Length: 552
Image (cartoon, rainbow, N blue to C red):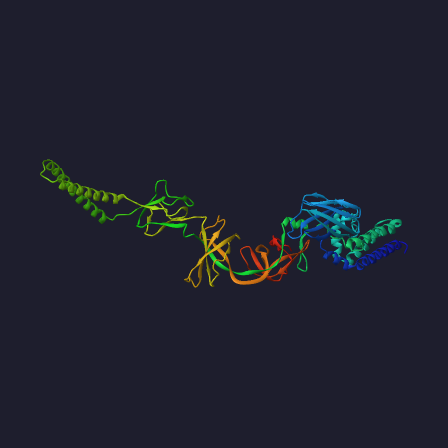
């Protein structure tokens, strides 16, 4: 009985450890833990907005980091003077890498009222807010919990114990006490068993949430995230990396527009085709054929066309040439005889002159036959411009009316659109290319003959026409006679959601963004009109909204 007494003591101590560990777990307040998970903006911070400024101050390692942006556009303001009234007195924040920083030794656990005096671009505003630092916050240096262990080991133990439950902790405590009692000397069994079990008791209690500071301690790093209600939390550093820009919405009356399919065509007064009037073989002029993009002037020779001759044509030409040669010889002998007789007066001068004229005509006819054998048709540029299209190869047979070259003036281009309803005359319009480029259009005229049950309408492109191609498809946005009320926002602000709905992001707070489902219709090449789903005077993300939409 005496030998079993130390063993009985160890078992009793281990059982007490089991009860303590179970109490440590069951007494935990899970409401606090859930609250800490739901927190957003994990590092202590304060937000304020007034006039043209929006400010976010974040406590990082006993230093207050201030982000100052334009309230309307969300542009970072780097050239400002900020004076902060702190519990330790007024301090001027130092500008550093686009932020403003000041030491915050006063930032201990509790609430701290701060007053910011901001001066930038000749404007001064006073902003105020309260910085709340929770007990055990990583920024205060009091981490608690498993601080006596290495961080990696502490995190691993918390993960294991947090998911294993009370039974596992109690079993470990009991086994440790029993083993210590069996293998140590009787005088030390009870003491060491108590020490080992006590350490496990303290560890299990800390692991399961008896440390109130650890239960509400948020992580020390912040990341952009989508919250359970669908809103987005995006810290200011992330906003600057993503280059988020916003704009205020304003209600106004606009003319309704319709979208028309169109394509770019050359100005008919500054373009032309080069065609062959007869079939023949193409040959290059001096210097060769002009290349695509070559600048040419009206009257330049671009190619030569040599018409082919059939065998019967060659035979006829030889026969005619022989007849002309024979007639030329006869007339030449007649003229020689007339010249000798004219000296004596036997032949009148008029007879000699007629013979000379007849000889001249025969020789011209003979020369024309020789010329027709090797003469080529010259293809000449009808207008000045550049070679936009070329269908020419040396030796190629050009058919009659076949387009050999197309010449256009790249500075004078038109857009041809098709509409199913009449448009107001002399109304300017806009067009949007496939890469999102905007074109300003001037109305030129509309046809009176339908083309595939649509009315062709011509517009002239005003302004820069570089990088535009003839035949390129565009979307024309032409105004109608109706008016409508709405909010004009850039097209870049509107996205297509996963469910097919049209959405845009509203900047509701300094670091909060909310998706809004809206109904829109086209306004012009740069903007759309929001008809429903958004109120006037709200900040809308107009740059990089697609990056916000990727946040999960």
